[in-house]
Length: 271
Image (cartoon, rainbow, N blue to C red; front, side, top):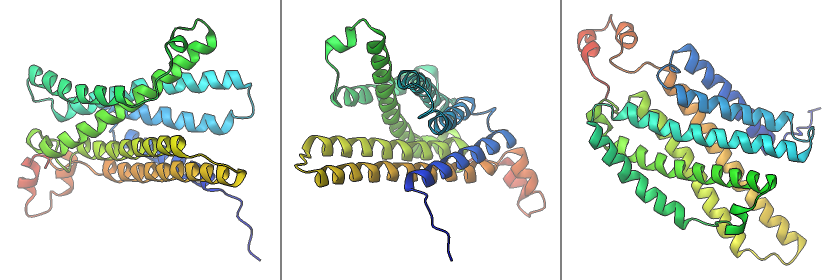
C-alpha cells in the first residue's frame, strides 16, 4: 500500500526553493564568497526570509499588518537587487576608467528606463498623490514592483555585456562574477517573460463561464510555477559554480600543484 501524496506543485517548489537558498547561503559563507559579493549574499537572505514569512505568517496575522510586512520586505529586496547590479558591474569592469564606466552605465540605464516607461499599467495621478496610509502602502508597493522590473532589464543588459566583453577584464566565463550574472539574467528574463505573457492574457481573456475563468487562473498558476522552476534551476547553478574556486586563485592553483602544468595554471588569469 502506497501512501498518497498531498503535495501540490506550489508546495514542492516552495520546499525546493527554500532548501536551495539555504544550501547557497552555506556555500557563500563557507567558501568565503559572501565577502566578495555581500549585496548578492544579502539578496539571497532577503528572498529566503520572504519565502519563510509567506509560509509562517499568512493566515496567522491581520491582513493589513501582513500586507505592510510584505510590502516593506519587497521594497528592501528591490533596493538590494539594484545594489547587486552595481556590485556585479563593479566586479566585472573595475579596471575601466571611471568616465568609461559612467558612460556605460548611462548606456544601459537609458534604454531600460524607456522600456520601463512604456511598460504599463501606470496608476492614475490621484492614486499617487492621495494622502492616506493605504495610498502610501500602494505607492511603496508600486515603486518596489517598478524597481524590480528596472533591475531585471538592467540585469539582462549587463549580463549580455559581460558575456561579450568580460574576458577582457578578467570576468570571463569561469569567473564567479559572470556565472552569477548568467543566473541573474536567466531569472530576470523568465520573470519579465511571465509578466508580459500574463498581462497579455489578462487583457485579452474574456471568460464567459466559471470553467473558462478557472482555465485562465490555471494558466496563471502554470506560468508562475514555470518561473519558480527556472529560479530553482538558477539556484542550483549558483551552488555548483560558487562551490568551485576560480582558476588562477591561490586555492585553485594549490589543488592543481601536483599536475604537470601547475606553474602555468597558477599564473593564468580567469577566462
